[in-house]
Structure formats: structure tokens, C-alpha cells
Length: 409
Ligand SMILES: [Zn+2]
Image 1 (spheres, rainbow, N blue to C red):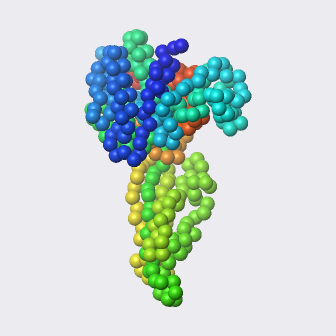
Image 2 (tube, protein in one colour):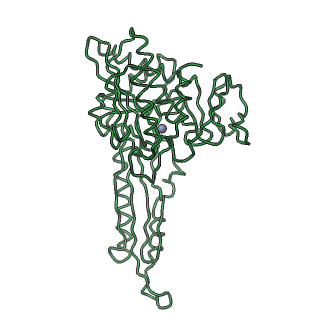
Image 3 (spheres, rainbow, N blue to C red):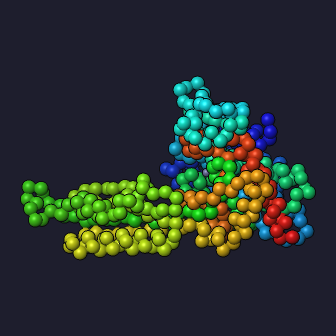
């Protein structure tokens, strides 16, 4: 078995599930154990500036082998696995030369079926790694870690491949939205970076939603229902009225691709006070602003119908589209595309209908698109990965380092 696969199978034995209920960083001790293990591996590989800080951020550098100056580039992956499914006692199964049909997962009734997951149709002849149906696999994002380390090992083994400084960063708690929080961009030292955290081969992502949360607070007047005539104002009715003023065809369940939405995701209701929790998403910054203005307008209309001050709106921006930070430097995307094409991988550029750590890092001064790992069905027991896809990710990373070196020659 090749070293890349061995690495990956070693890494998935660590239980690194992050814990949203723990505010510590890392949020689970297993992540630190894993980080220490990786630290030793990076030192043994001969990397320089290997450092693991007290928050569990692991960084290292492969110094340039060039006589001329080339921008330092980075590769980033996260060490934790999603809270959605257990990542403890992962028992990976190897499916050699997949020829179609259902794959039995472990001893239970659980199967991985091309009827449910049509992506499998395109993987005939591949060697796949699946779960045993009781846990997630952890390809998200231990495949990314294995691919980055294998690519660096490849560069070390082949000093004839030109490359500048290659910065490596492994982060904790990405799955609970905190991976960028304590990332030291200056210490990392790269001018731009790529997260290796995407799915199927070819994925290249540098656009994500602009995101705002919008809380609508409705104030009622509570009176004993027996004597409520002309006195009671039921905040739940105000909230219901407000929700009916929102466009029914601009919701998550009615939109896709580049379409934005309003999403009522929670409600806390009583006669005296009712709060509606919305999130607003739009790929364009002006679109996001227009959606905020629309909600402000509806609140004003409702306040005009009722006594003033019955309805309040609190808007809080969450994150923005990294395209803003990446597009001024088109070579970041162009190099990734060219690296893929050189490796016979067709770049598949699609917008992320969510946020990523890369988006947050982009606004912290480290433009950071996302590249595929070769994995599928992240966050659940049907997660699997193609070994051929992993090998292509390694090639793309190596080629990206080389192409960057050659561009600045
Ligand atoms: Zn991930």
C-alpha cells in the first residue's frame, strides 16, 4: 500500500471530533493529541519552523530550493471532524477496483448505493475507502492533511522540482466555525494559500456567500385572556405577519447556484415577546445590502400599521464572499487551474453556498481558495474517498508549487 494511503489510515484512527459546547481551543483533547503526532511527523520529514501553539495550531515550512525570490504559498487543512457523526473507532474498509453496485458497509444493513449517491457511477475501476457504517470516515479533512504531507514529502524526495517557500498549516475546530479564529497569518508567512478541503476531483472554490443574521423582535402586550378585548397585542401574531411579508420563493428550499435567500431558522415565541431568527445570504455584497434594506422596509411598514416600536430589527454581519479578496489577484486561481489541467484534472469551479475558514482567512489578509481532496458525502456514515482522487490531489499540490516557482523565474 502506498505511503499516502498509509498516512490517511493512520490519521483516521485519531478521534478528533470537535465539540461546539466547549469554548476551549481546541474544543476536544483528541485534536491536540493528533496535532502532537503530526508535529513529530513534520519534524521527522525535515521541515523547518515546526511549531504547535497552545491553541492547537500546527505550522511548518518547506524552505525554497531556488536562488531567486518567489512568493511563499501555503496549504491548509483542518484536524477536527464534524460533530454530526462519531469519529471514534473508525474502521475503514478498502474496496478494490469498484465495479458498480451497492457496497456493504461493515456487518450491518448499511450500504453505500449508487442509487442514493450517483457520483459512484463515475468511480468504476477506482479503489475506494469507506466506513463500516457506524462512524464517519474523517476524509474531511484528514485526507487533506495526508495529501499536503505527501506532496511535501514528494518535493523533498525530488529536489529537481523547483519550489519557493511552502507553508503548511493544520487548524483545529473548523467544523464548528472557529478554525480561522486564532490563526496567526503573519507567523504563517504565506502570501496566499489553498485549503485542501473540497470534495470530488477538480473542485476549485473561491466564491462563498455574504452572510448576515437578522433578528426580528416583536413586542406584544400580555393581558389575561378573559379581559383582553382591545388590550392584548399578541407578539406571535406580529411575528406571523412579518414572516408572511417575506418572499416565499427566496428561501433555501427554493434556491440554488448563485441565488441568495432569506431563511427563518428559529423562533422563540410568547404573547409578550416573539423573536424570529433569520439568516440572509447573497453572493453579491450589493445584493446582501438590498436584502437588509428590504427587511428594514418591512419592519417600518409593520411599525406603521401597529404602534411604533412594536417591531425591532437587529442585523449582524457574519462573513463575506472571499471573491472580493481573491479576484484582485487572478494568478491565485489561474495557477490552481493550470496545475489541475497539467495533472489531467478538469477544474470544476462552483460557488460555496456557505462560508469557509478560507473565506475568513481571506479577509484576514491571506487569500485562500479551496481545492478538492477526492472525498464524498462528508459529515456522515456514507463518507468515502477515492484513492485515485487522493493521488491526483497530491499531484496538483506538487504541480502548484512548481508552477508558482516557474511563474516568478
Ligand atoms: Zn472540511
